[in-house]
Picture (cartoon, rainbow, N blue to C red):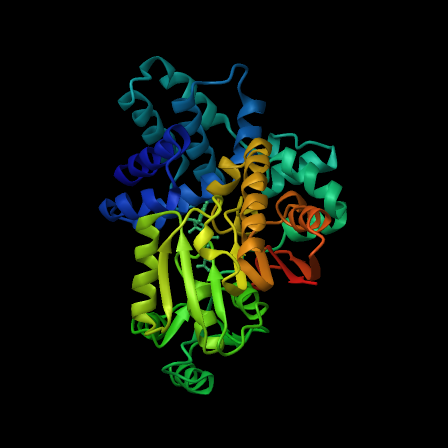
Length: 408
Ligand SMILES: C[S@@+](CC[C@H](N)C(=O)[O-])C[C@H]1O[C@@H](n2cnc3c(N)ncnc32)[C@H](O)[C@@H]1O
């Protein structure tokens, strides 16, 4: 019962106050008797939000209040996916939570709705975009956008890609070779495979955790590595990383060649994350600077051989791992983000002598090709030398966009 109350309170703060699931879970799940189940319920409800909304619309005549909707979502999710909680106990406890949260008069409604629920009786939409939306948990407006951009088949393929649960790590080349890392993984009988980016997909285990804590290796996605590699840094270069925290790409860039890096971010507390990461990885020649990349900084004018614009984005390419991304996404927010992304790219061009890498972890053209396309159209001096949209493939590849621009 207590774990159910905790999961409900966490969900309520996410749905009502816009809290982030990972932060709320970190803060509060410690108090649970079974942390795993609280985490599973919270992430499960968020991942299945569209499906749960749909079920509620089918089984209730009038939309309940926000609190009761969250309670019903949790109850329905548990009925569908958590076998270890018997139906009678689930219904009973959910009704008690309803009473505890002052919705006494709705106890009967919650009780009968959950008691009578059977997903097999819910008629799924027949229209294919709507069906895909309900079955994958991706909001309908976004499914429609994807279908327009990629066609239905491609969209279905990446939206239905299974959740990949291995981590991706790489060696810290300052202290450990790739071969030495492989030997450690072999010795520890770690379940791993090599990635095209030069790292390893691996199940997180005590040995991996220890390697990363001691700075001998680090968690970094394969796409993040590919992005840093595409900067093509050379010894002696001065490199600007405009949106740098927590510093994954900056630190990796500093290992790829003997470069000096100016690592910026708009959040002071996130600059601390870069400093901590630089310390753990014993990285060299990385200066952290507070800077708002949307605002022109004359101190940076024409100072850098290359600039990385790993811009703030909607994060849709990693939404399967961070389910509240769908909850908070909207067309309005994407349009606002694309304005910021364009401003950052325009400023980057004024700071850079030869190459810019523009990247996001999202899948929508509005934040990706459209930004660099518009930029080169309006800035004759620059050309796009390569651009690639990566889509989630269920085998460790996130949704990611990388474009390399050069001065003509
Ligand atoms: C995608 S993350 C960067 C990840 C980072 N490049 C890495 O590899 O670890 C985007 C970062 O941009 C920062 N940011 C957002 N708006 C910004 C702005 N206007 N100027 C500078 N940084 C900004 C955020 O604080 C966040 O740390």
